[in-house]
Image (cartoon, rainbow, N blue to C red; front, side, top):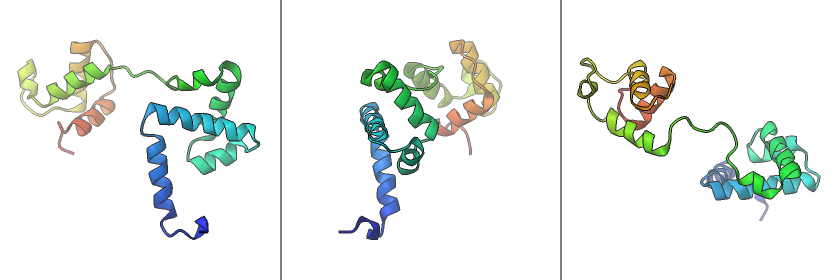
Length: 143
């Protein structure tokens, strides 16, 4: 079978990418594979094009592996979340109740109101736009 003649190739690629991104373990093994391919001679640009990942990410994984070894690729890359999973569940619970239940005025949850609420309850500053995203994700805001 010639893989170039597969009709739904883009869909299959998307499905594979989703599976590779589905868990931290699969992301770790994907990072190892990208570094292996780079050491075998593929450029970061080629790997980025083939994998759908960014060239800076590929280069970061290569540098991390060379400097600190495979175990360092297990570590979460990027900025740590401001809210813990427990705090997010509390916020999810909160937005499924009326703002008035927490001493705010009548009306629906808004990004600025949720931002204020999170600061008051968790001492974490989130931008109102990020709070709007949370509301949309939690179903607590009319989109």
